[in-house]
Length: 129
Image 1 (cartoon, rainbow, N blue to C red):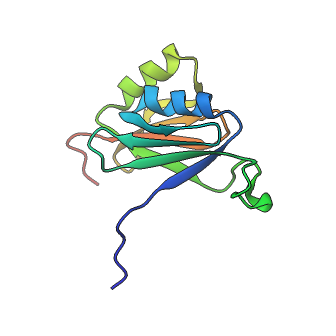
Image 2 (image 1 turned 30 degrees about the horizontal axis):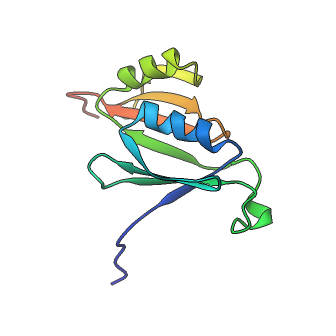
């Protein structure tokens, strides 16, 4: 068996502080490490991690230093509408306001400061197919 002990997603960033603030204001991340090349965020319950690395850092291969395409990050939260309120008040880039989907999620789409697509979803109570 190939057991996974930890999963850490790293986002390449041109502005570490803006990215750090985006994720800590919207979600329950706390800053565990903050430097001029890397920021490590950890959820309050210490189960989820998010790294933000300077896009041009030497450990990021040059062919991966472009803006992101072909992926997005989903955060499942209790209330998409609460996150939407914060995003609006912080003037974060909102791509789609919260709406109900055919598959039972209330979904909000944001763009983080470095161009990553961020999907914020919450289950619709009592939904059935």
